[in-house]
Length: 445
Image (cartoon, helix red, strand yellow):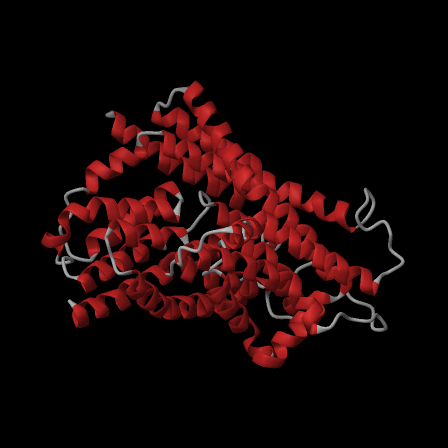
């Protein structure tokens, strides 16, 4: 058997092991991901020392990137929940959307929030609201979690300044203004497909979150302003940093924006505001930040989430260290089939490697020499090419992606349910995006 075939077989068996361990045997995702990684490494013939180095590097890198964000976000969420701020936010959103369309409100919220904020950070911040709304409306948490996740997923793939679309626009030399405009346009049906998919899946896999604190009827609730500030402030700080970088702002002001707009720092500011709001409701609680208080309870939950997400990063790291990427590049470098070329390349790399950014960037890099042949030489053609790369990179969104585990763990979703919902809806989103991009290509190319 050739080495290339061994690598592909290793990937297929690894994914099969992951699905069986989590869906059928109900093994904890952390250990299921370790078993998956070892299976891939052994079957593909990967050097075990190299595998261990890639595993620890991938896990360490992922935990360094997102571990602090998850810890801060989880503590903030616990403070919002205990103080009744999540209750206030849920009531405010329900007043605007109505109980029937609460999930749509979450999807739209995700659509806008994911433009300046990474999906992972945003989901951790917003999941307490989703849980509260699910508990209050008795609408399945599957619907709420998936609607929020897929709303975040839509603009994350198409709208700069998110790194993926921004990098692809740069590689293809596409006009950034057009990319933002048409990316936001394509993201609307993609977000709606995610919402309708979430509603459908919520009826099939109905559950309500268990770890939601019921606020006593006589408890004073924070004002809407105080409730939303811990979430809006980090978003605004990250947005200011992004706008400053895009506008080429320099000097002391930009230095301040750069520090405060770092996700961990921005979330820390939000946590401090949430703590102030909690103290307004419970001024007598002087142990909230101690070993037996709200902070400690939240960090116990955060620790498990960080380990699972870290194991997902380790699996992704081993995939990247293997010959898989070069095999895929060699296989698909000759495609000359219009928008299907970047779409298929993006789809293959997202499914196999897990990183949406790598999928989009690889697709863009591989089609750059073929822009004239594929019909993307015009300024608008370059925008269409960028959108096709992103459309392919939407799927298949599954267990080799950190965001998959962030969504499943923070929303208390059983892994088997996550596997039966998120990947399928990501495929629907991708095909919807491809259809819209195809129509745009007919109109503009």
